[in-house]
Amino acid sequence: MNKIIILLLLPVSILFETEWKRIAIDQKVSLLLPSPIEKLDVDGKEAWYGEIDSAGKCMVMVTDFSKLGLDAKTLATELKKKETYEKLKNGIALGSNSKPTNEEITTFRGYPAYKITMTTEAEGESFDTALLNFFVDAKMYTISVISAKGKSYKTAQQKLINSIIIK
Image (tube, rainbow, N blue to C red; front, side, top):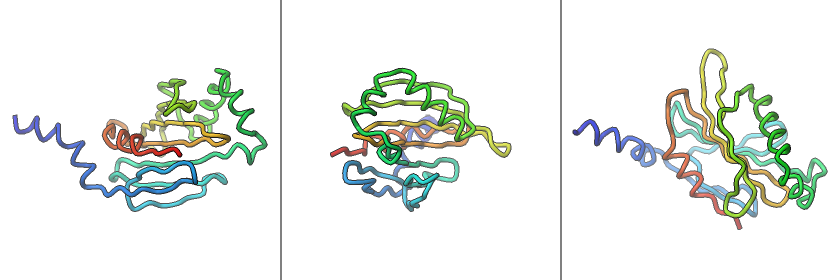
């Protein structure tokens, strides 16, 4: 019985062992990430990265489509087409050398959104990535939880997603 209780509390204990800090991605979006947080440049896009532990990572990246000549109105029109999400999925898979395993076109807090899970094989290791992409104005916010194959970070993923504030 004690082993069952320990196993049930293990995901919760991860949240208490890891310090989470709120960061402002821009004037519209803020969220919590595990600390320490590293700011990165990923192919010209702003990104933030934090480790849950040695097998779990969180990453947030912003794609500003206005820098690519796509305004908010045009992006909103494109997001009504299923093929837009297919292109997005294929671009993410190609860019990360991953295989999509699940996807869902949805909304997040009233904004268009696209959830996708992927598996990546790299350097003899396997990783699972759960992504939430949501679109505000002409920007796509990509929220990722990356974990070693077989590890689950659902509690941390939920904490990250629940912490998102959109102004």
